Image (cartoon, rainbow, N blue to C red; front, side):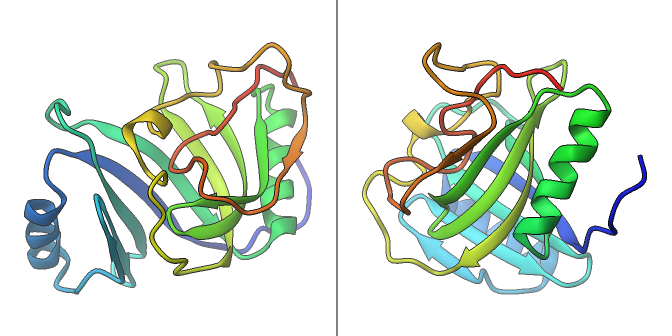
Length: 178
């Protein structure tokens, strides 16, 4: 599909981990950098080489190698919407979240889910490094997919005031078609 060029910044990988502190030590050594953000049960590494936005989300009882979700960080809300249109043109179901509080930041994003249930987001960070909130990045808000839609959800775009009610995975995903 022809469209405007999307300003892709870097890949995003969110891992569910059993122990954030232990994982911070591992990734500090592996990436050779300090985490940019650390909260209770959460850490973010923002690597330049390789260009990677890596987040660690603590979940007790996590299986070995469990992935929370994957993503592509882009430069603007317009880039998020362009990615959504590309995904829809390819016949993929999408779900948008606008001005949502996620991972201690306000973001605009669009989501798709692969056939194996792996959720991918295209997102832009609008405001970063928010204070810790009790309900952010909890097991109750992790691991949802675009297939978990509430029947009452209106397709297309959800716009919400930034809050800490949920984060780190599709919030109230919906089943919509291209």
